[in-house]
Length: 170
Image (tube, rainbow, N blue to C red; front, side, top):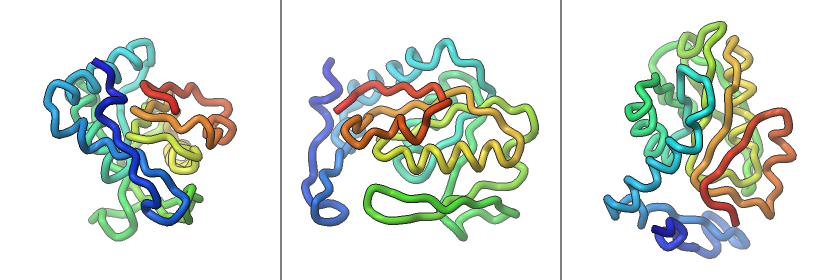
């Protein structure tokens, strides 16, 4: 099954000049979604980690079932004001602006080995910000994985020093 067949381009979203890679058709097809999670599982089989972190919202969709499959913990990374406990935050640049992400201060402890998962790796800004936040609280990044990588935006430049893997590259 070619997972690219389940990703559509949405021009000028979320703003003019951006071509958004929409993964929702994949989610609608249980066979494609299953292949996606199986592919992610295969992609990370040689990483050593005890936690998976992912940013809302689409990162959750792929990271949570992967965490269940691998029997690992899952840590949600949220937008400001969405988590009820004390948080650590980081501001970062997107391909189309800036944003802030937060996680609970006690979500990751010293020595935790963390895998970062998201749906799309674009500029690398989100993944870099998450990595910095994880490291700030004592975690170690074991790897960074995504379903889709937009290589023409050169995200790996921002993520040098980390092992980065993707299933689909544009």
